[in-house]
Image (tube, rainbow, N blue to C red; front, side, top):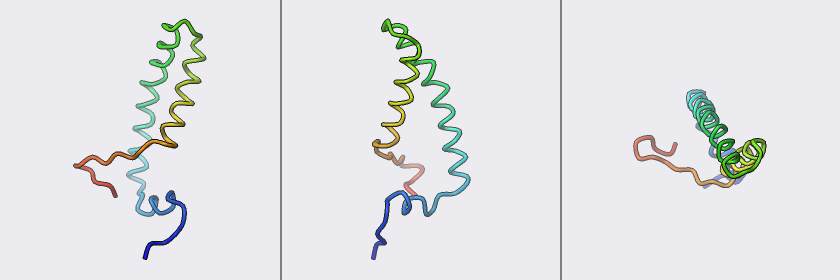
Length: 78
């Protein structure tokens, strides 16, 4: 019988510090690429660089909050 509760708690049950480290590194790499790109797109669109930073932060939040988790066939979905 499945336990009831928030999906966050049930999905975090097997989460290890090794996975946390990989997730932090991945987040830093995405930020290194996303922030300069969002600033460049805002400037090329005739908007201020701050608008690009805001759109990257807000867009990143929505993707992380409502995005679907993708499981690659070589890593599994633990």
